[in-house]
Image (cartoon, rainbow, N blue to C red; front, top):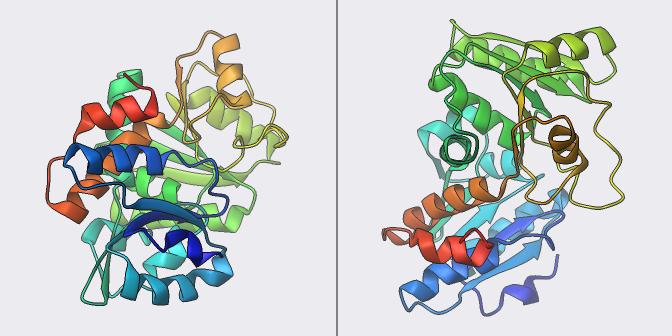
Length: 280
């Protein structure tokens, strides 16, 4: 962790990896639209370093975006937490004032807006499959359940983690069908894909060209949505099969806009942020 990168910053994004992040360009475009300079940077923070970063942030920063793999660890360290973030045990936005850190999650709002905008997808009555069960999947799955999803299934390398999330969803949404299995469970993997209306890739796989494939994707008619905002093998497979597909750049836009409004109390300048991300 090189905190010297943040000497001139009052806002930033943290995660591991972080070099790929387009949040600085997007958020600085938003600040510039209000003639507030370019106060937003980025810093690689490993999971073991989160405590040291929080100590720094209390004294030096006004706001932080949190990305993988730090969202759940950050939720455990905030002084105050929003209701949605508390329910999902995940934060992606920190607001800092007078040495106190408030944590919230805009991931749910971001994914709902992005799905509507890019895939014209409304979750009510739909069957959704997540690849991965981390902090972003937690927030997104709760948001989709709240909006009336019929079922939400999870595939994850560590099946116990995914099963815990499925049980948590069922506890909060008794009408929801939810289950989980591992990527190695071939029979259930095929069943989950065949039954899904939407498949969401929520792991960090795909940020690097040499990342291994998530899995061999079974037959499905589902739409594909990738939290990674670059062209991934997951999205390439969808297009090759003629399936609707979208990357996570629009989700980044909307969750970032909501973060900006939490920090500043100002309406996010969406057009400026879209241009910074190449969406206009």
